[in-house]
View 1: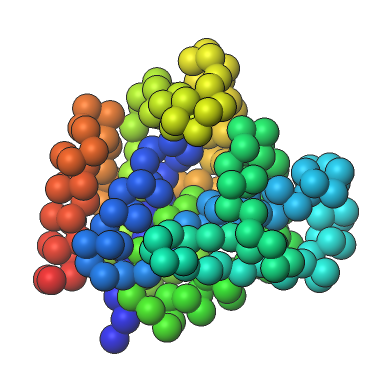
View 2: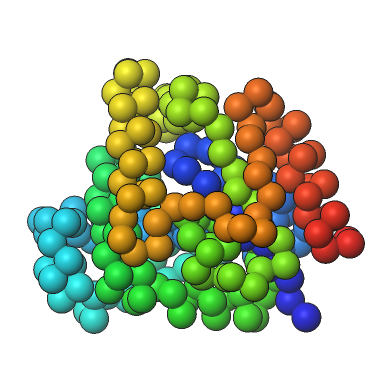
Length: 224
């Protein structure tokens, strides 16, 4: 039987970094669902579609081909109509586009089966906003990963600096708080902790400590 590990939490909590590292250690497939929604957001951005206009976004979906690919580097790459857009979807301006399109029920329904099929056919570590509550409600392990807005803003700043797209702390913090509000107040699959999820707050933890805590949760829940 395949094992599913669902990691949910707010933007900048370190879900992707931790999940990717854990997947490598455990030999699981890592699925970054945020990147999938970012791909739809990037499509809206590149096509000059208002991401808040659900009708316009939904009308564009049938012509899209969204695929996940795993290269020799072991990392998840996003393909949009056959083109690798992995770098483009990480541009700062795409964050709000991703948040807006992910609020639409039509977009979530469009991507739901893709995510579930990956879990049916692989051992997966999947991160996002509603993995444990909607996408994989029967996951063997559910973790709600969080940290204070300030800690998440500092981590996001470092990430942006490393990518060569630095932003001021106050701007990053403001966007983090806006994203938190949008994600937790949307009508479709809002961000919330599943009742059977383990809460892991990494505000005071470094990466190694966070990874050790996450690994202990996984081993305790799976017995592996």
